Structures are given as structure tokens and as C-alpha cells.
Image 1 (cartoon, one colour):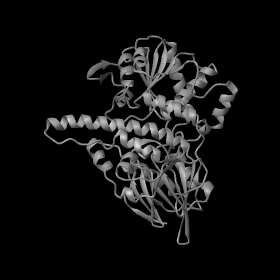
Image 2: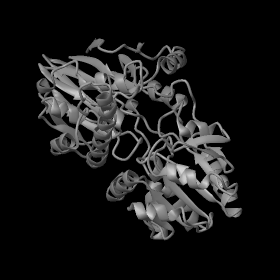
Image 3: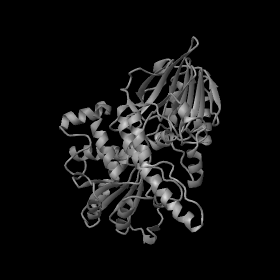
Image 4: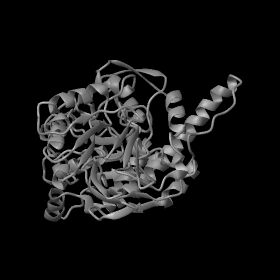
Length: 467
């Protein structure tokens, strides 16, 4: 029994791990590595194993850094099953199509430049057709139901609490009379987040080895309730002065969380009943899937639904804009409203138009609700720069900017420590992945004080572990 990390090793993207048992090969995740264009294209194009040799793929959740290279895997010859929860299967459908569209557009853009330089064209990493060929391979399995991925490999999906359908993957392995129980965390969610159930810890399952993410191993998160209190106060102040609230938000997960909170506050009379718009095609499609999978909602959400006879992600003031015309019409209005739009880092999509049209009014507020990468418009706004460039033109910012920390759907350092300590006295090893070296080092230092924990490893890519 052997495990090797082919991605998300000493970095946070491109999750991909190869498990070999009884001569069979099972791939855990098949995510896109994300970074500079040239580096990512070459890195993602080729696999360090033969895709046709794989017997199964197991997918923890639909985020692109975990699922986004599946169409390339299929394009390279993989024809087996992709096992996931049903909600992950449905979210992956819209996200892989969206990703394919981006790759096709990127290739078209690059090829225009290459043509001018007399260079041959490149092909997109994969196409919409490749994505469509991938989706029929998905096999949906309910949470907590055991299934055989390959001889000697029994699998269960356990609630991870990260996004809709997210799961830790519990693997019971048997080879030549030897047995091992391995826990793969996927991305670890946070307790007490709106909408979704809390993550389950591996300590409840008597595991031998834990493969766990450490994205925020160096950073404790602020209390989630304090973050939402601040979010509420900023909206109240803006609406009181007659302004618009503009929120760049990731389409899957963050948007639905914010919508549910606004629903609660308006339904319970804690926020003025102003129009709320979700203006992003991907976010609208993702919200449709969230509404189809209310079996993933937590008890608090069900209590709200039953008490108020009110759906979690629909209320009278909410509109999901589905056309360009509807989106453009929002910029003709001057009444107070809340607009949630993508992209989350304000680099593309309809959010650029909303920022451009509202940045000059001091009554308005742009609320930043997630980490912003360097050299993005979102980062420049978060830094409260006065002059910003949008669509090649300079704009002077009069609108306020507020940054709300603590809304991440990833576990912070304190929760990661508790997650690892849950297997103290039972596990034989903990393997850290999906985290930068600084984050991993900080987490390992925190864990080093606990003598009841097994050895903690932070392997480089392609390092093998024998079980």
C-alpha cells in the first residue's frame, strides 16, 4: 500500500494524490495548479502517471484546485469512474464547464499574440467538449455509505463542512492480509458557518494515517460571529446614508453564505428590506444547485426554514440576475441596494462594471470579504488606493472600502491543531499537504508540543509513503 503526492505538496493548489493497493491505482483529486500562465499550462498539461492506468478517481469537493484538471485527465485517456457526493457532482458540472470556457478564451488570447510573433498556436488545456465527456463518468455516493473503489479499497465520504457536498474521504485498505485506515481531509471547513453542517473530525474513526490540509496553519481565524456582526454594521451604515453595497464574492460558497445571512436579517427585521441582487452567471447556477441539495443544510438552517416558512436562499427582496440586460440595468438605478457579484478578486466579470459605476459616489461601500491576491484590483481596493484603473481608464475612489476578515470557509490554525490532536494516541502518522511552507512550519511547531501525537510529515511532491 503506497501513497504519493503529485500535487498540493509545498503549495496550496493542484491537489492530486496517487494511492496504489493490490496493483490498482486510485487518484485522490485531480485539481488545477494555479499560478503564472506559462508555468501552469506546462505543469497541468502532463501527468506523472499514465491516466489510462488509473482504476478510479475519488473527489472530495468541486473547487477547481481539487477538480479542475479532470477534463484533461479524460482527454489523456482516463475512462473510469469519478466518485463523489451528489452535490459535488452537480457543482462540478457547472464549474468544469466554466473552467473549460476560460481555458478556451485564454488560448485564443495567447494565440493572437503568438501569431504576431510568428509562433505556432497552442491548444487550450482542455475544451468544453472535454468537460462534457467528463461529466458522465461521475458516480454519486451518499455521505457515510461504504463502497468499493477497487479490490481492497473501501471508501466512505464524511462531512467536511467546507462547501456544499464537500467530504473527507475515509479509506479502509487491505493488501496481503495487512490493513490500514487512511483519512484524507480534502479542505476542512469551520464549525458554526451558516447553511452547512460542521466538519467531522478523524478522531471519531480510529484512523491509522491522516492526510490533512494546512492552508491556514499559520493563521488563527477571527471568531465567525464577530465577522458577521461587522458585515452587518457596514451594510447598515451604508444603507442609512442611501448608498449601494457592492460585494465582490466567489461564486461558489461565499455568495450563498452571504445570501443566507441577508435573508435571515431581513426576514427577522434586523436589516432594511432593500433590493438584493446576485449578479454572476456562475453564482446563479451554483445557487440553483445549493437549493436542490438542501439535504446538506445544518439544523440551524432547517430551523430557520421551518420557523419562517422561508427558503434559505430565496426571499422577496432577492433577485438572481440571469441576463446581461438585467445586470446593466442595475447601474441605471440610484436607490439603496446590495449587489453581490463575481469575480471575487475583481479581475473579471460583471463586478468590474459595478465597481466602475459606483466607485465615485461617497455614499457607496465596496465590501471585501475574502483574501485578495497581489496585483489584482481587489487588492488595490483592499489597500484603499484612491486612484484605480478599470478597463484601461483611471477612476478616483470616493466610495468607502471595508474589509471583513474571518469569513473563510477553511479551518484556521486553532481548528487545524484540534483536528490533528483528535487522532492523538491512535494514529501512526499525520501527513500535511495543501499548504505553503510557512503555514506548514507554523502548524508543525504548534503540534510538536503534544507528545501523544504521531510523527508529522510535510513531504515534497512525488515522495512515497508506505502503509
